[in-house]
Image 1 (cartoon, rainbow, N blue to C red):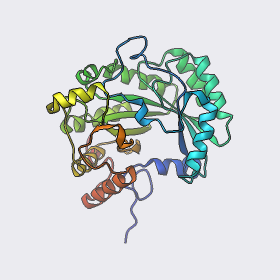
Image 2 (tube, one colour):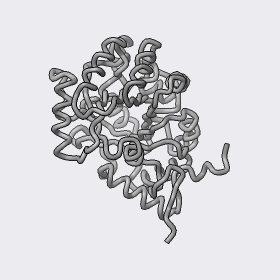
Image 3 (cartoon, rainbow, N blue to C red):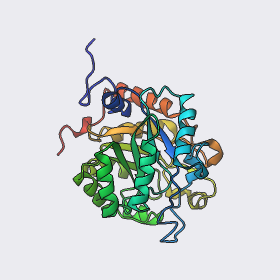
Length: 318
C-alpha cells in the first residue's frame, strides 16, 4: 500500500499542531494558560461592556487566580498538566485571558521575563486583539522573538464588519489585516483566531472567506465554534432572535470543517477545530459536545472518505 504524504509531510490529512511541535521541539509542548491581570479596551477605555459573546471565566482553568501571580499560576499549571499529559518537551506560558497587549511594554516585558525564568518554559504565546498593537508593544515583541519562541494570537473572530460591529468587537476587518502586516514585517509568528456561528453569518460566507484567511497568511489557525454562555449579551439575543444564527449539528459541523480546510492554505498549521468549556457555563447546547480529539477523529475519517486533504481545492486557484 502506497504511503500517504502531504505538502507538510506526514500522514495526517491536515497540517497539525502536533506535527509542528514534533518538528520544532521534538515532542509535545503543553500550554499553561495564565491570567496576567490585564483587561480589555472594550471593558475599560471604551466602556462598552465587552464583546457580546465573551465569558472569560468559561475558558479559565481552575488553577488560574490573579492573586498567585504569573509564577504561581505557571507552577500550579505545570503540576496540573503533569498529571494529565505527557508534556515531555516542556511548556509554553500562554497569556490567554483578555487582551495581553493592553498594557505598557515594560510591564509585559517584566511578566514575560518572569515566565521564562520558570523551569520547563520553552516559549511565550500572547493572546490579543488587532487594535492593541502600538509600536512600543511591537518593538518589545520583536525583541522577545529574538530571545525565545513566541507566537502572537490575534482574535479576528469574523471577516464581516457588520458582524464585528454587531457583537461590539471594536475593530474592523481592515484593522486585522493591518495587525498581521505589522507582525509579519517584524517576522513575529502569528495565530489567527476565528469563530464560526456568529450572527448574520452562514456556512457559505465562511467558505468564501477562507481566501481572506489565506491572505492574512498566519502561521497558525485556531477555530472555535460559537458557544452561548450564561449571562452574556449574546444569550439574550439568541433566545429572542434565533434566526440570526446558523446552528450546526455535529455531523454538519464536521462536513463544514472539511469543506473549509479543503480551501485553506496547506502552509497554515491548524491548532484547534472547536472550543471546549465545562457544560455548566453553557446556556444552549445544540449538539452533544465532543472532546476535541473525538472531533478531530471524525474530521480525519471524513477527509479519508473523501480522499481529500487541507488545501486540495487550491490547486487550480491563484
